[in-house]
Image (cartoon, rainbow, N blue to C red; front, side, top):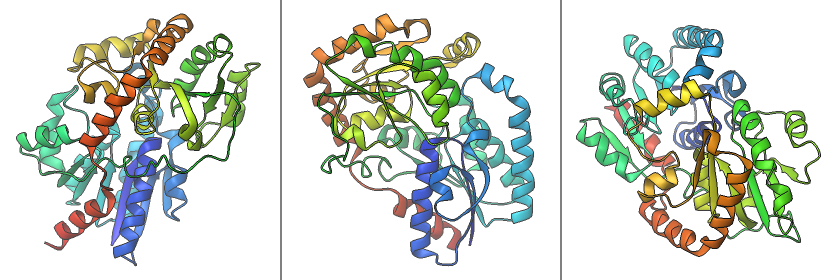
Amino acid sequence: MHYYIISGESSGDFYGSKLIQSIKKSDKKAKFTCWGGINMKNQNVELVQSLNNLSFVGFWEVFLNIKTIIKNFFIAYKSIRETKPDLIILIDYPGFNFRIARFANKLNIPVFWFVAPQVWAWKEGRVKYLKKYVTKLFVIFPFELDYFLKKNIDSYYFGHPLVSTITLEAKTKKKYTKPVIALMPGSRLQEVESLLPEMLSCSSKFSDFQFVVIGVSNISVLKYKELICDHDVDLLFDKEILKITKFAIVCSGTASLELMLYNVPQVVCYKISWISFYIAKYFAKVSFISIVNILASKELVPELIQSDCNPTNICSKLRNVMKNENNIKAEYSRLIKKLGRNEPYDDIIKTIQNCLRG
C-alpha cells in the first residue's frame, strides 16, 4: 500500500516518523511519499519537500511567503497525481492541509487527519471541510473528542503522542554544576529570530543558573551562534537535557506541552507581526495561547504576548514561576493523568487499515 504523509512542522515530522514505524510492522511492502523533516527522512522514505520550505506562522508572514506557499501547493498536486497513493495522512498544518484534503477528495483518495485543526479555538467554520473531505479524524486531547463527535465527525482519541514518548527515569549524559534553565525559542526561523534575543537577555540576571538553548535541526548552528553572540549559554540540539532542567522559557506551541510532561515550570512567550496578531485575536475563541493553560482552564503558567514579551517581564515572570514551582508541578500531575499514558500510533494505523479493508 502506498502512504502519502504530509507534515509541515517539527512536531508533525516526529509524529509522522512514529506512524511510519507502526505501518511497517503490519505492512512490510508499504511505500511512503512524505513531506517533513529529519525524523521522517530517517525512515528511508521519499521526501518531496522539507520543513525549511514549509513552516510559516502568522497571516502577514504567510502573505510575505505566498509565492513559496503557492509553489508548494502545485508541487503537492503534481506529486499526488503522479504517485497515485492509496491514502493520504495529514498531520496538523491546517492552512496547507485543508487544501490538500479537498484536492484528494476530488481524486477519490481517502484522507485521514492526525492532530486535529484547532477549530475549537478559532475558525470554527472550517469544521464543514473536515466533515466533507476527511474520512477519519484522530485527535490528541480528550476534550477534542467530545467536540468533534458532537459535530458529527468520525473521530478517535487513543492518547496524546508525546505522553508515552517522554520518560523521566533515564538520565542525560550532560552534567552541570548549576541548575538548568532551558530556552526553547521555537522551531521556525522567524520565531527564533524574534524570541531568542529576548530570552537571552535574562541569562545575566540569573547567575545561579546555567542557561541552555535547545535548537532544532532545520535551523543552522551558525544562525543560533549569531543570535547567541557573547551570551554565556550552551547550545544543544536534543531534548535529553529537559530531564534535568529546573525551569524554562518557551515559545508557545508543542514545546510548552513537552515541558509539562518533563515536569518543568515555564514562562510562555509569543511574538508575531502586529497585523497577524490582531487578525488572530479577532478570530480567537479561547482565552489562552498555551495548550497547558487551555487544558488547565486557567493561567497555570504565565504567558507573555507581543510587546509584553520583553526582558523585564520575562525575568519577572520567571521569578514568579520559581516561587510557585510546587503548585505548578502538582497541577501538571493532574493534567497528565487526564491525558492518559497510551501510545496512539499502532491504534491509529490499525483503524486506518481496517477502514480501507472495509
